[in-house]
Length: 338
Image (cartoon, rainbow, N blue to C red):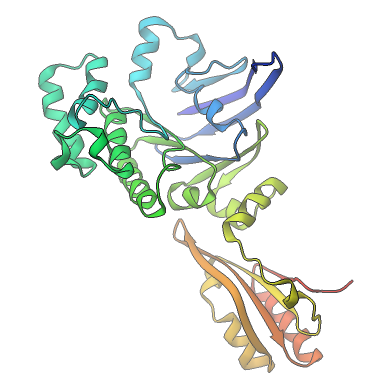
């Protein structure tokens, strides 16, 4: 569906300095998938996204959509192409002087849809996003989540094949974010729309995306299945981003006693649901003090991290650590002395 072929984007900043915002990025996005592009501010992810609908022209390489180099489109061809792509923004971009229904209809009017089609489709779209009862109100009466739902209805009004989401949940609280992500997932499943989601939060990616691309300083540093990247990150930058997601720090005083191993246990796949800790207590005569941890489900696959303190004799501790290393994805002693 979308192919980034060695795409680079460079421009001069206000000081006249050359900025290489995107550097030789290449990867494909499959038809009907939800792919997340994640990275910190300035990573180049939004700039790359905007090459899809030619809001940003590459200065090197090309972006290809359905076999067409979008950089070669202009005039009417470009306008028609853009109508096949919906876009959702962080700040909603609603017209304050138009009602909810008029905001949605506006996207269809720009595309030259007939009045009969607009009158038929707008109520369908508002029902889809759960705002059928808000058709005649103005944006300033809506919550942030409701405004974004209007933005989603507007973005899919012209039956796009691709939906671009540029930090679509960054201005929303966690509960509203989850509601919006569920709606996007429903739209993807119902209409088969390819969704590309830009975010700086891995928590957003793991809730909705099948694959994730990680960008840092304009470069693609890692791409793969969300579960694989989340559970087995390859690049140091990805590992740093993920460490913020779990935030499993423990007080320094707990790391000082190396006679009581402080152990990080990483579960991956089916073993995340096994009674690993109970087996250590039962079979090795070791007390386990659970300090921190969580298990999450990413694309219905369990993944978890647990930080525990082990208390027992040296032999029992050695045996229990050996058991843990063989029966979990990874076991790391955090207070091991060299």
